[in-house]
Length: 375
Image (cartoon, rainbow, N blue to C red):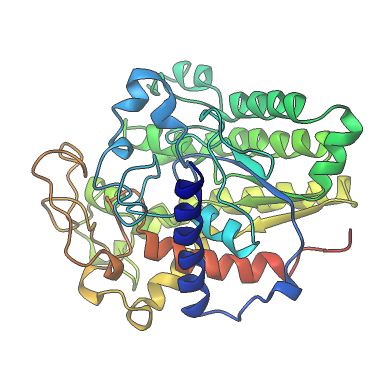
């Protein structure tokens, strides 16, 4: 066991050195980072490090439970929906913390924080979608369930409430990205954007309620990410083609879908501003995943990404965007590109390790410049 842990440490350390040596934003030195002792992560597949694949038989059959997922990290699948590491992994390394373990993995260290995110999860409870005729998977672990896990974890970790509050005061809490699946399930089951837009206040309220929940437990530094520009993602580009060239922007993304993503993000930002007024002693930051992704896309050639594949999946098959929902990455006969480091998109839904690395660098620069580090 000791030799295994040493091997894992060396691998993780090498990843951090690689990330730091190739950073494109201003280097964040140790002096500029807060001495956080733990990180807590809520969310979906953007940040799930292994919870879904531990959620019974259905989770074990997930695509993220088999190669080529994880091939760039430990050369085996870990439950991450990528070929390697995720943004939360790079953020943990930048803060000189171990990678977070999934909540559902027993007998692993969790005193440095826990990852509660589950791929496919929603901000809203499944009953919301059932009432609107939208199917969500049985494996759905909505934000309310993840918060229950959080409370249970604290009960086991702390002797007293004051002890928990002290721990959380030195923690960084990520509430999301969450909410993307609430819209994904609706879009891909034929709901019109006019109806889906009415879900936004509910999704945002569920998110801000979660923020208040973790504040109530003692958290004083909370990061709340927004949604991606979904009109740039291969699954959306494939599912909603448009014969009108004007439907696409200069990055070949669908304008209307990105407009919807901004609609959600603007609602979220306004709600967070109200929370800041309500909790002036708490640092509540909006993490702009939308801008971070577009920054990577616009700088793609300078970052080493192949210009001809900016909207194409690396692991996929068929069509203009190398994505076929009936033959997803991980299925027999579905190939993987020879140069994943030169691709932004991994499987048509999620990004590659390389893309997540560059996004995390952009986000760290934004987040750590606004975090108040006085303990």
